[in-house]
Length: 289
Image (cartoon, rainbow, N blue to C red; front, side, top):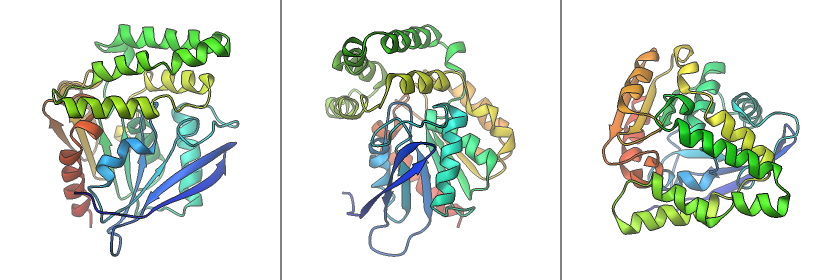
């Protein structure tokens, strides 16, 4: 049973984006610490709520990345790893979140978070479904190339054709079906409904193409050797975007990191294994006190 907690929404104009930040305050009492979280591609703050509700003692700050959810696209930076890291650096400064802040990233957000951790001090780093191998060099290379072409084509088509194609329920449901590993019908329905509600929440086709190209072109490993803080990696054994072998190789590339691999789940551990993820996160964060 989840514990009620206050949600504070703030707006910050940075890099030409009207950026919305969702801050979940601790339930009943003093905060055990602040977690700054970066969501994945085509997601927004909603995607992490199942984990957030199980960490009631922490203040958890989740911006909708520019161009997704409630945040408008940037006009002064590209929607790629460098651009997102740049605008989040500005946001961290504006929120006065310093070295005592715990950093978390999921999926594409794991790459952005890793870059942030290489640029400035944090108390710890937690990466969920960390991108451990380039999509264009993985077993999903063909799918990644086809998806990239699909996004590019839809961006070039007239808006009345391209926009509905990118937001189509058929495309969204197909992605949900492929990515969800759980056999539980209630969980499969939950993931489908979440994707239907938020997968189409991008602000422009150009933003979507830029962000997708960035998501398949980079890995956490580009930054791992520069990150000396305590690091927790949580992956799914059945994740096509990060096999157990490449996740272990990624772990060994950090100065100090541990790896937890969850069974019977792929790239959606934030939905399908939220309780287990929160338990691992909670224990890890407690160790940093």
